[in-house]
Length: 227
Ligand SMILES: Cc1cc2nc3c(=O)[nH]c(=O)nc-3n(C[C@H](O)[C@H](O)[C@H](O)COP(=O)(O)OP(=O)(O)OC[C@H]3O[C@@H](n4cnc5c(N)ncnc54)[C@H](O)[C@@H]3O)c2cc1C
Image 1 (cartoon, protein in one colour):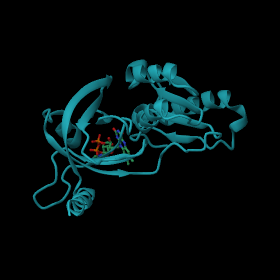
Image 2 (cartoon, protein in one colour; image 1 turned 60 degrees about the vertical axis):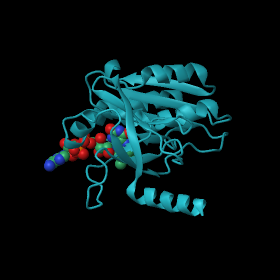
Image 3 (cartoon, helix red, strand yellow; image 1 turned 120 degrees about the horizontal axis):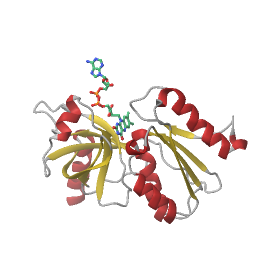
Image 4 (tube, protein in one colour; image 1 turned 90 degrees about the vertical axis):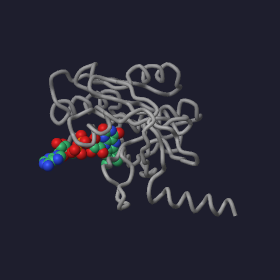
């Protein structure tokens, strides 16, 4: 009986979103904030997946209200769910920035299949720009303790060092994780849509000359930037 109630509730959460609370926020780069949310019971996800976040919860009419999609930055083994975003002056981000600690939110998901493959003999090459680092950080945090994992190389492009989110965490992962190579790229003064992307590809090409042009590199550029 209680498991029936439990599974009915799970189904309900899949539709309306899991209730959660904001438990903290911190700056992770210039203009970029990470938000920590209480992890709902039974909320399972794979590293690399994303969710829909509704900071004001559902509206009385049952619709989502103000909702945005975010990759989960934290590991599936972590106690909290962390998301990160560039803070711009938009309706959603204004709502997020003034959300009091302890405020209830809704988290719908997890969704997506952008996850690290299991075949350890096939290396992974991650190309990330800006806040596009989010799903890779989740994968790397998980891979750090979930062995064996494929050899991973991460190329991470930002304009300036101050813009680069989670650099300390990435450096720590680099020193603590076997088979992980971290290549930060600073494009200073150029944009990711132009020269920045070209430079990121060039760095990867130099490191993996044999993989081009047939390279199966998985790429996640900053969500706000168009190719
Ligand atoms: C799978 C997935 C994962 C994602 N993960 C992340 C993540 O980890 N972190 C992250 O920050 N973002 C992520 N995003 C993107 C995120 O959902 C938001 O789209 C993004 O953060 C922009 O939100 P915003 O509030 O700044 O802009 P919004 O207000 O949502 O506007 C989006 C764009 O439309 C423009 N716009 C808005 N209104 C108008 C208008 N009336 N006329 C013309 N233009 C307009 C804005 O200038 C902006 O460029 C992800 C998206 C997807 C699909």
